[in-house]
Image (cartoon, rainbow, N blue to C red; front, side, top):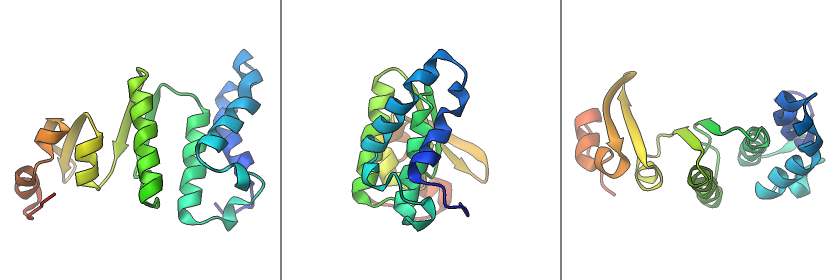
Length: 153
């Protein structure tokens, strides 16, 4: 992001699909809720350009959460997050799924995905090589077969 939009402005972009609808009346409360949930309230007036990589990631996650979509599609959303923030992301996704919604996440953190995902699709060169329960599909043997490397966790 090259312009100095504030954290709050960027998170508010997530409410854009609801402009002109009755749900727009909830914008301020939803924005405040996701800022709080992502630990960003104290940064809400700061330009996003002044934030660390992990803070920016949390801002964009808050923007996505502000949409209140039943389906979350996250591509490497954990890439710039520290251990605590990754743990928080995992809990948030688990809660989202436990409430009857869907989360699809792409990650290269295979041991973590093994313990946090219900089902996985293992890809190699853009092709599906295995799919099913995470604990079965993301075994050290499967990783060895898929990528030719020894894995242990």
